Image (cartoon, rainbow, N blue to C red; front, side, top):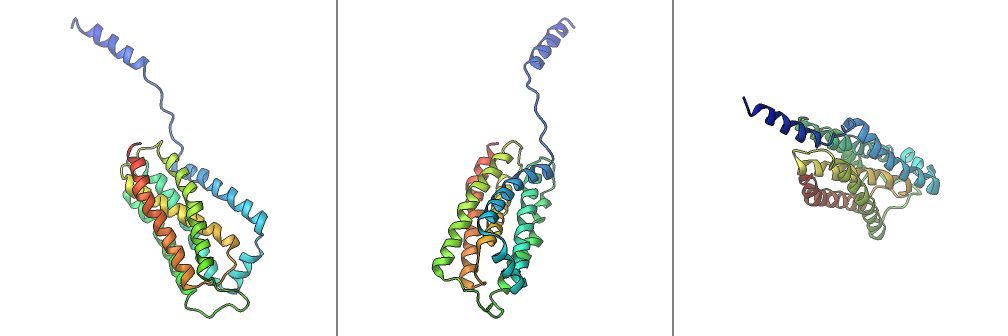
Length: 216
């Protein structure tokens, strides 16, 4: 019993040195924060390129519009899934949330290669497809970096899986932004370059982002 006062004093000293931890906002609110940066980029691009080209493509080929819709929804759901997975105790099944929209994005993009060519709209050659590849990679890097930075404040129990979802969110957001200035009909070369760019972004996030998140 004589040690009780000393134990209480030790507890008081240790408690006085603790720093309060600020609670993180809910995943949906943090998702809106990241999407707001994507929206700012989109607004700047719309101011420069306008929306007439994009709307014309979608009216002439609805499959392109569905593909763009699927890509945008994939960016939203993948970002939400990443923020949810970063919270300890959340189900790993959150990783399946972006799958339906990703299938729509991929399926509608593939359908564009099977239909007839849109009159008056050029088909992308290899040089143009390379530009699309560079666009997706270039925009995905800062968007991925921002997501990783935001997620490091949490504690992902599945860092590699979370990083893969980050890559999917960033790549689909970049592909959606590309729609604003992409004045070409669907082609196998274009689809292949998009797929390769998305795969590279996801792979890099799995390797680098997984390591960064595991140190959080």
